[in-house]
Image (cartoon, rainbow, N blue to C red; front, side, top):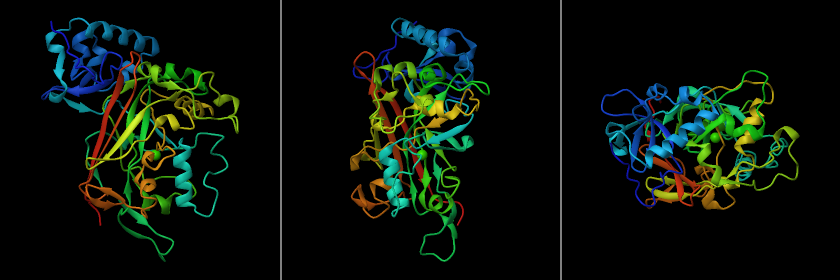
Length: 393
Ligand code: CA
């Protein structure tokens, strides 16, 4: 038997305990929990075959009461002794996509982001469209291209046409961007015609990840009218490998910035809001360029789930939904380079060079942390991606 050392100030203490899928050497992927700088093999530690799976889905499907019970059991284990073979240094494991993604939806819940994009894409109109404060606007994305952190991103090619061009041209995107978001993972789904109320959010959503919604702005600007984003975003969406349980985020729960004018319709009202005080940091080639604050989001993740199911649509274990780009009111809180460079007109300085959108070889790392139950902060780890040259001219 052995004990797990948790370094002082670790973002992965006993109040966090995020789940992931890992392998060691040539072994098969299995479910683990991050504790300090170690990964605890749950199948080995708990003797439960549900954790020998290559995704969190079988465990998540067991439902809320099991999530609570297993978390309690892990907290007991890591404060005592665990079997020798069940602990691995995090630096020696390979981390995999933690969930088998069912459906993927992306929202647009930051008023600051939606207003900035409105001004950039529709300069002669009101920045927010009339529906925006009445419902969490979203679109269905491509679940098959959700990738784990560290996966390289090949620059997409596609059609683009600026208003000055007579006809569209085809080629590699020249305005490749990021969107710093949180992703929410549905653990326990619902059958058809069973809407989820906002207050039932923690019984259905298992956890949260960092999410980078890679976006080709030139492809998006030409294709998005009237049905929304398509190929400008479907080529890649990266997520962090550790799923932070909603049970760990209770201490980060805060009110929303304000929904009084207009008041949301009754199906979107929360008896206690699920605003979350989560801080993100965006690094571009190692330089910090932004600190997006999730606390500024207009719509909560509980309202997003309620909206997604109010029409009778079912939900499934492994459904993933993104919050939309997280942007605050200040310039250094904007979660996309489109906004940080104001459409490319106000370049940023990255490693001493003036930059607007991503160049081949660039790397973006998004990290995040939140207050934990015991007063220490808890971490989300990181979502990292590097841009490779286009494969189609
Ligand atoms: Ca997005």
